[in-house]
Image (cartoon, rainbow, N blue to C red; front, side, top):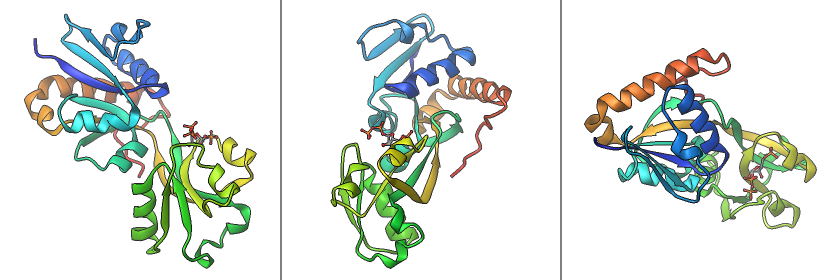
Length: 223
Ligand code: PRP
C-alpha cells in the first residue's frame, strides 16, 4: 500500500494533533510509543508520521516529503509556502502581536524609524511595510524576544502572545494585534490529487470531529 505521510510539529502541537487524529479515527499508536525515532511507520495502515521542527513542517509538505502537515498559522505565515490550507484545527490558539512598553500604547505613529525585534521577520516586515506603510529595521532573534526592548536593542517586538504572562512579567503590553493564530492542517498540492481519496477521507473525519467539539469551528479561517 502507498504510504500517507503526515508531518507533525515536534512538541505540544504534535501531542494535540495526535489526540485530534485519534479522535477522528486515525490509529496513532506508533507516535505515542516513547522513542527518539523521527519517522514512525504503521505498515499495516500505510501511515507514516514524521516529527519535524515546527518551522520545517511547511518545507516537508511543500516538497512532497510529507503529504499532510499539522502546524501553526504563525509558521505558515512566516514560511509563505504554496500549500493547501484546508482546516483550522482550533488548538494552539494565540495572537501574533506588536508589543512594547506601555509608553508606546496609542503612540506607535509618533515613533519613526522603529527597530522591530522578532523571530518572525517576514510577518513583521509585511505588517509594517504593507499594512502600516512604514519602513522599519527588522532585527531577527531566535527567542526570548521580550528582552529586546528591555535592553534597548529594539523599540518594539513582533511575537506570539498566548496567556500574556511573559509580557506582563517583563513590563510590556500589546500595542497592536497582527493575526489570530492556531494550528492548521495543510496538504501538498500534488498529493491532494494523487492521494485524493485517502486525504479527503481524513480531512472529512477530522472536520466532523471538530464539529462535535463546540469551541471549534472547522475550516473557519480567522485571519
Ligand atoms: C513564546 C512567545 C512568547 C511566549 C508567549 O515563547 O515567543 O515569548 O511564548 O506566551 P505567554 O503569552 O503565555 O507568556 P516560547 O515559550 O516559545 O519561547 P521563546 O521565547 O524562546 O521563543
